[in-house]
Image 1 (cartoon, rainbow, N blue to C red):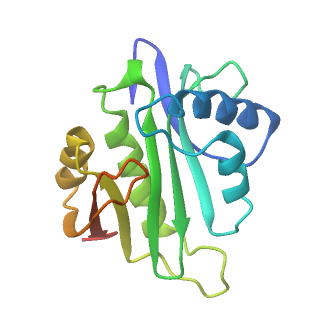
Image 2 (image 1 turned 90 degrees about the horizontal axis):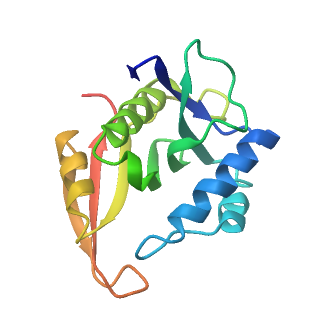
Length: 175
């Protein structure tokens, strides 16, 4: 994705100092959202589990250079990868970047990574399905997931701390 000499790249979090700073900054933003998500410390704790991965999008002026601390994260996605499937734990796009297609870019890259990445287990295979929960009131996210062919499989009553229900979606990683 590129416009006016800027390039958006999909990166995997590898705990570099610049990435820690990027995560700290964007997690401060998502904590302010209605319903909030985990704090920086909670995400760091989750990332201690070998199955959890964090990806992010960075916008920078071309030519594309390695991520630097001045490159703000535009979006982030946190997943938990099992032996045969993955759970999307959270996807976030900066408020000023919403409706610019970054959620779609994140999902495309995520499905591609899941389809070709065998995971950490010896003899591991690419993942078969992706699952996620989404707030019943989050219509933009629901529309995005449905545009990827994700199907509703159930409702989790009172799933969120404020009592809101969650829709559970799934999709095969490869059609």
